[in-house]
Image (tube, rainbow, N blue to C red; front, top):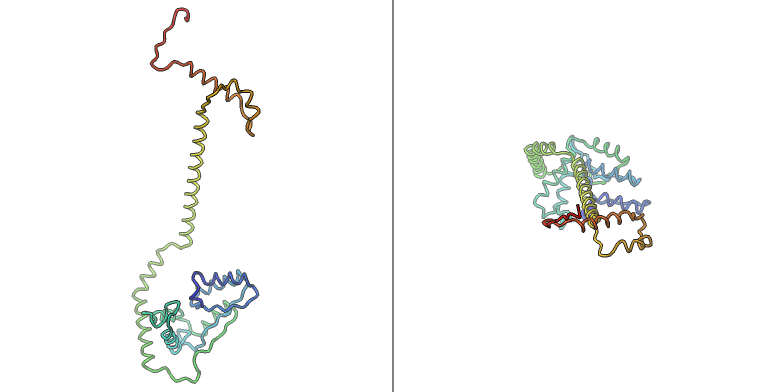
Length: 265
């Protein structure tokens, strides 16, 4: 059952398709709108599969592919359910509203147009029998309740639909927002890497500028060629550092009195 699977259902179906490419799968999951249909089409293209929609058979109305009789049966079945994984059962406080919302996904399409669109997308169609052909007409009380519910739903959508349209219109596309976030994260990662590199270079530079030796370098110069690193070692570097050290040692200390004799002149 689709509601028992957490996460993206059709992606999981695609994964199973790749594991078992020569199999027939029954996807027990509602696919109520065009957005889901596109996901199924993408899944079929990526896994080289064929999807066959299974829909309840109904004569529909002038503006909906499902008749009021079918809607009544759908609501009745939902209200008979207990402990539904999707929480759409008799304990749901808004089960009727949810069913009306699904019903109005196809508003403006008659049965012929609805089936033609599915055929264009998937190439085939299976109809599941729902209502008896020799049934009695829908009782007036049931019909009245359904019509009242439909009118209230349309009134609700009319009042709040314009606000939803405005809020949807002012948002940037989600893909664009994700792209901008990724760009900024890359810049942050690059800056952080450059700062760490500069810090390491500063540490090495300091170490090289302030070497300290506690032994007689001149007496041990013959040892250096035997233990030199892989990269050529400049002996002139050590000699220069040694000469600088002697110069500093012979330099006068600040505050020291310097007397010059006649012999020194």
